[in-house]
Amino acid sequence: EPLDAELVYLNLSQVFSEISESQIALKNAEVNVQELLPDWTPNTTNLFSFTFGATNYSFNSQWVEEHPKVKLARAQWKIKQSKAQLTTMESKANPTIGVNAGKSGDEDLIGVTFSMPLNIRNNYSDTVKAAYSEAIAAEANFRSVYRKQSFEAKANYESLIVSKKYYEQWQKLTKGRLDSSENLLNKRWEAGDINTSDYLLALNQRAEGLHAGIRLENQFKLAEISFILSMGQLSKFEI
Image: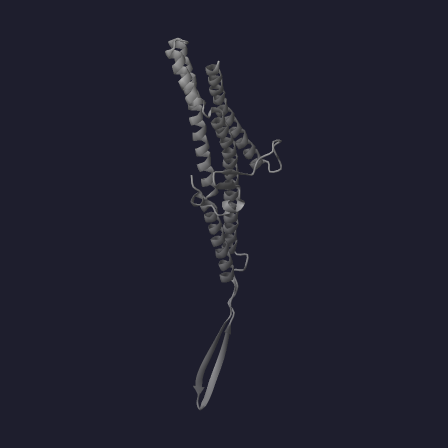
């Protein structure tokens, strides 16, 4: 029966939402493992770019470097680094030279003085050590922020690929069937071919198929936004 076939397709579309959620969870797990174990690679082959409308998305590490969080951490590191260098220069002993002029009777006298302060604080003083320790800590923080942001963007990227794939499959599967199934249901019920109980059950199946599509679209849009935000490139894309 055509109606039964339409309802089967709509029921099948509900599975896409469940598969998509499972695939996204798997991709996120893979990225988390890669963060902990850099040498580990999954058995599956991952895609690295795809096209959505007129916008070409790709995972660009340079974009991660330009993310506000990463740029702030880098700036803080450079400030600490400059401060450490300045502290080192200030800790060095700098000689001073002075010139004096005067008279002794009818004679003009010129005197030159040279002063070299005792360098009690050398290059390894506590002040210099503390300044360089802060610079090293700031560098470690920058690398930590960059690494975390990179893996967050990668996870969101993988989620976007998966959610887009299953949303498009749902669209292809249900194209034209949502309206046709409703028309067939109404005609058969009005003709008395199916009782009210079966009619309501079929309507519920159709509604669940629609709900699956809404979940997939919502999942896809949220993944799209999360990816763009994690790359710090919101101004470059249109959603």
